[in-house]
Each structure stands twice: as C-alpha cells, then as structure tokens.
Length: 217
Image (cartoon, rainbow, N blue to C red; front, side):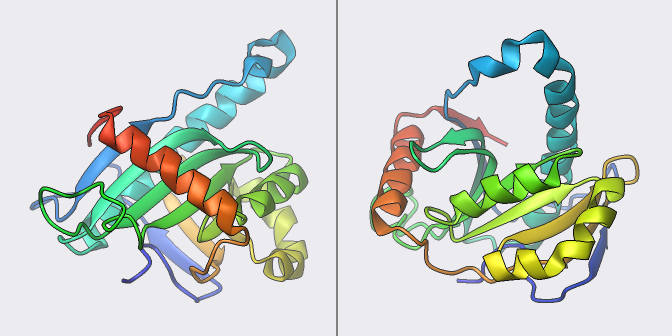
C-alpha cells in the first residue's frame, strides 16, 4: 500500500487552495476523539502560545487532509486524531492514519488494521528543537514522524537538516496564510521502532474506531 503523502523529494512545494474543488471524496475519512487533554495548557503562561500552535495545527490539518482526500485511492480509509498520548512515548499533536479495509463490514478488524500506516505530526511555532525531540519519540509507535513549522522557524531548522535525516524525522514547512506546504525532508514509511508500543497504539486506535468515538469528515 502506498504510504499517503510519502515522497522522497527533499524540497517539494505544494500549493493548497483555501477552497479546493472536490468532484467526489475518493476515501472515507473519520476524525477520532482520543479524549486526551494536557492540564498544563490551562496555565496562563502557556495559554497564549498553545492557542497559537493549536490554530496553526488546525490550518495544517485541514490543508493536508484536503490534499490526501484527493490523492489517496478510494479503497483506503483515512482517519485523523488530535492529542494522541501513549505512556512513555509522548503526546503527538496529530495522527494521520490510512488502511485498506478487509471488507465493507469489517473496517476495523485486526485484519483490516494489520497494515495500518500511522504518521505522527508535531507542530511548533518557535521551539523546533523541542519539537524535534518530541517527534523523534513518536517513531517508536508510528510508521513515520514529522515536525511541521511556520516559514520563519523552518528557515532556522533547515540549517540542521542533517540532524533531521539522522533521526529520520521529517521536516515540513507550512505557511498558514497562503496554505503553501514545503516538504524539505519526508522519511519513508517504515516499521515502528518498538513493537510493543506499536501494538498498544493500534489497540487504542482500533478501540476508538469500534466504539464509534469518531465522526465522518
């Protein structure tokens, strides 16, 4: 199965119109509610910056999802979820998931989710070093992990592109004002670094899907 959004081109520029024309939705999309909340975000000192990052992430998610819905084969199912926390491996800002159902009636079975492809995203407005450290932890349960930054921060992080490559963490630049996405480095989808963490993550995702704690996009 093609890994959605996967490209090995170091510098790839995608312009995503704010109102992308849609003939039909080629894939089924669901938004999963993981029910996670970081109480530290209630602190006054963190509220402003977290609100800015949340808005940035929301614009990126919308733009990226529009692109994936138009390029992912119809036979695949897609899902996104915010604030995915796995004990010992951090809290990913956004998960993007794609899988090929075994049948129309068995969309969430272990067989259907066996080849689930999980992409974990961390979004930062300024502290790219912290973002890189966090994103690197998601590789233990995800097929790939990427850090998304605004242009001004990405310009600084680009000087350390070798570090991103060494850690196998992607570096994407997203301009929320123009909806331009630049993929400076996109790692290939590979096996998660920790099989137990991977199994636990799949179990959490599967449970949310089966319990209906999601809605159609």
